[in-house]
Image (tube, rainbow, N blue to C red; front, side, top):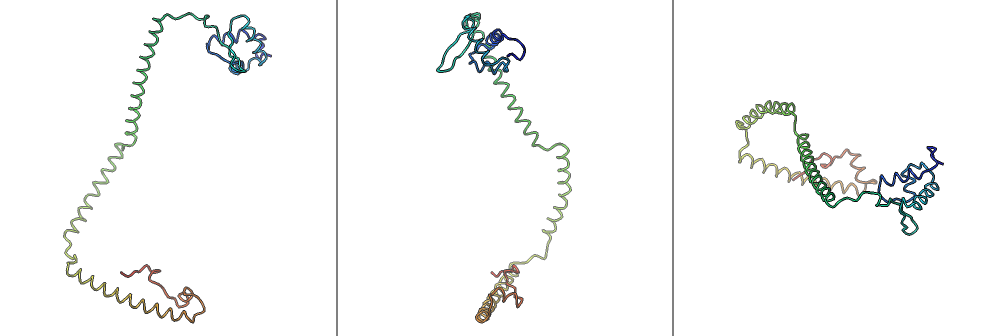
Length: 210
C-alpha cells in the first residue's frame, strides 16, 4: 500500500532510475524511495518496466540489478567529451590551488593565534622594564661586595669542616656500638628503644656527614 495513496509505483521508479542513471537492486530502490511503496509492489513494478523494455535487468548470483537503457539518453559527441574532460581538469587544478591557499591561510592563522596580542606584549615589556633596575642594583651589590671569602679562608673552613665531620663519624660509631650492646638485653627492637629514650638519628633530622 502506498503511503501517498498512489497505487502505481512504476512511474515513480522509472523517474528515479532516469534521474540517478545508475544500477540499483529492488531493496535499494525500496529504501531510497523512503519505503513509499511496499517491497512486493516495487518488485512487481520493476518486472513490469522490464517487460515494457523501459528498464534493463541483470542477474548477479541471487541478486537482480535494474537500470535504465542507455539508449534513452542522448549520445555525447567526442568533441563534447573532450571539452568536458578539459573542464574537469581545469576545475581539479583550481580546486588544488584553493586547497593550498586554504592550508597556507590556516598556517598563518595558527601562528597568529600563538602570538601575543599588542596589549599583552606591552604589559610584558613594562614588567621587564621595571625589573631591569632591580637586577642592575643586585649586580652592583654583588660586584662591590667586600666581605667575600678569600681562597686561604675558604681552605681553612674546609679543613675545619673535615675535622668536625671526622669527629662526628667517630662519635656516631661509638653511639651505635653502645646501642647494639643495649639491644642485646633489650626485650624490644631498635625502633622502640629509640622512641623510649627519645633518640633521634641524623637521617630523621636530615643531617648527613661527608
